[in-house]
Length: 194
Image (tube, rainbow, N blue to C red; front, top):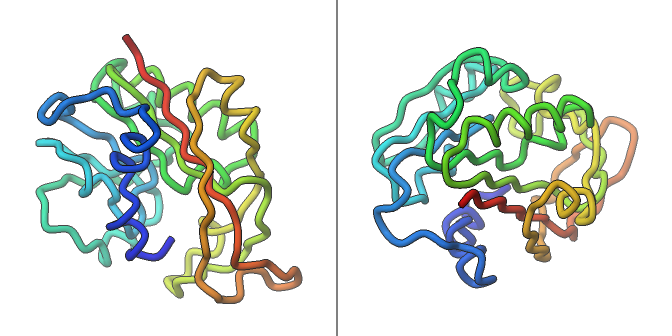
């Protein structure tokens, strides 16, 4: 997703506008940014501790962040191997669940829920969007491939409150054989723990 959207449509703003952001400033101290890739979108969350985890180390060399953070190179499908239960206030997985097979995504979601103390947030395109090219040009085709699609009902069925918003993707070639449209919808999903 383009950086311009990250700055304007932060997850805090999206969920605050929808009445789903329960935390006051300072209540989220630590954030685990799952598949932080190039973006480290946790930089837009008011937190003292940010840990990004991703498998493709090349992306780490291109992160632009003006906040302190720590990076961990690890497979996001195996988060429970390195992060104990309830070790972060908030766990976010923005633009990752569509990159895994559906069963792997469901397993990762459960692991994220176990690691989180206060809440979990995911962002994904609505439906399946074909992509098998590293649109950023860093050689991560395997990691950029979309392997599944998600619908609102699926995430609501897992106990998430959902916001759907229109979104314009960058106009770049995303798939070697299939055409994609730039006008899509994004699902932002939040699960809050008492």
